[in-house]
Length: 82
Image (cartoon, rainbow, N blue to C red; front, side):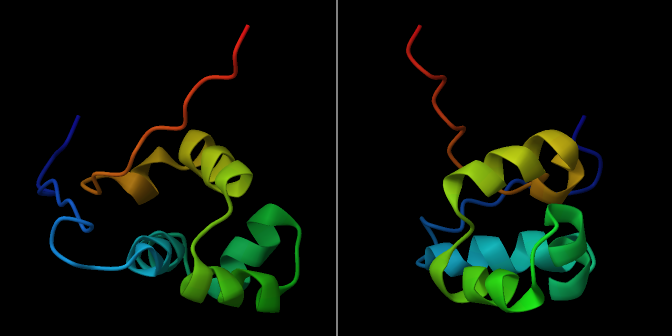
């Protein structure tokens, strides 16, 4: 259910991938909070702000915290081949 959050396609608006990472990290409470969630050090998460969230971490965060991705039109990870 999308309540009050407009759907935004950041890539079509000319934003680089790191804008998605920044938005998700900020929605989850910032660099230190995401580092604790993922059991890694904050400098690793800070790097995501520049280079994007690694695919496996993005899949985890999307499943564990779907609200952080609400309104962001991001591609869904493709299921693994059976």
